[in-house]
Length: 377
Ligand code: CU
Ligand code: CU
Image (tube, rainbow, N blue to C red; front, side, top):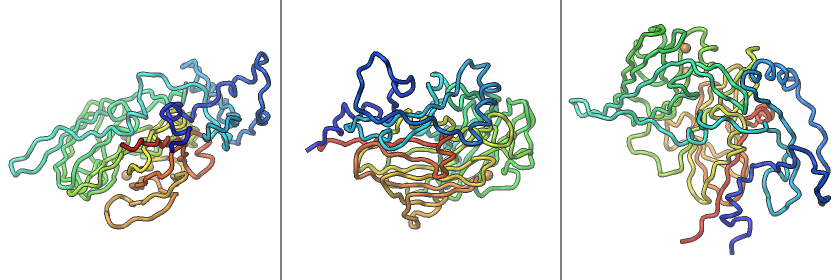
């Protein structure tokens, strides 16, 4: 017997969407409803209070946008058991502009390169990465002057199999010197540390992919903090030769942005856009294995974390072993650390995932898995 809230109509409603009436205040023409009173004005944290003005002046004027954080009123409709019923949520009004970087598409986009074979039979995968200065939108109406690989932050997710030859054609079309430093085992001059690539120049990185696991790449030009925080990073995924079990696979890069350049982050996210997966929940299927490739590149804060609601996950740190994992619902990662998370939902409905540092969650690092009932065939 299917519960009414598990019908296809119900699950198509995007449970993370706020009640629009909550953001504009009560409509005087509307008959009174039996619902809880309006929440009191939320007190802004020091960081929010200090930065709201700076964001408004520096980041928003050119874009003509506003970053208005409004409390979302808990819904009185108990047939919608969404997070709005028990969480007072903060999120910016509106959405990012269409046509730019799409965090929803990024989740499942893997670049396997141009594939051929070397004379010895080894698989060769070739990739092209171009450093380019690009303005990116990190929250509705909030723009950030980024340095990017291929015009996006994070850069493309580079995927290969252990033992493949990886060849990366790097062109620096940006305005500053850059490199690409891959995590992995390789020769010193392939490490992207000392061979600085000046604007207009290029470099070719080539190495065998090892070890298998979840790695990353990033610029390693000093000042390193600036070159990483500006957006020059991406995921480098090396699959084991025998593969991993079939799963719904999602790439999540925990990142953050110092939009007023004071050495502190104002916007936190997975995959760049704060609150994106709260506004656009990620649909999962009940009983389907889900695998999250989780990488932390957050600058300025020493750690970040991932907490899953209503479930536990297997946590494979660095993804370099198939037989060793933790069984937990929260993982903490230092900058540059990563972990592969595997889980299966037994219950349908909306489930939050977010940084367990509450401040990060309130500044954008929060999302929703919308687990859908799959009819028995
Ligand atoms: Cu750089
Ligand atoms: Cu690194």
